[in-house]
Image (tube, rainbow, N blue to C red; front, top):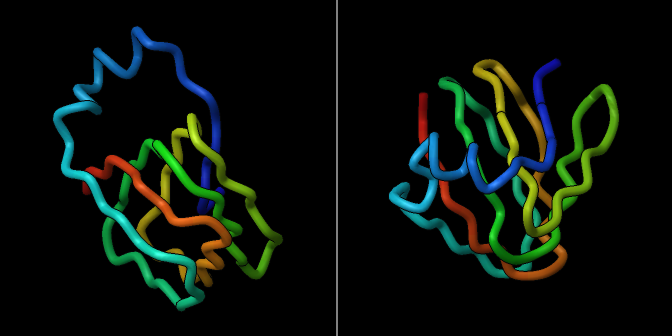
Length: 88
């Protein structure tokens, strides 16, 4: 699977050091994205639909998302986004 979306517990947030990762913010918009390395994200705010050739993924606050290397998708940001991110 090129995208993994799941909820994680506080213990995993602490274990991964997510609160120390950089924060990315983006206004309502729509744009293509290509991943040449794996990215891990933890969404703090916003609402996004990630459109892929295998279907759409709805992302909301509290979601932990893995975007795998090689993914091509379209981001449809419906509410402004704030997320922690880390390239693996």
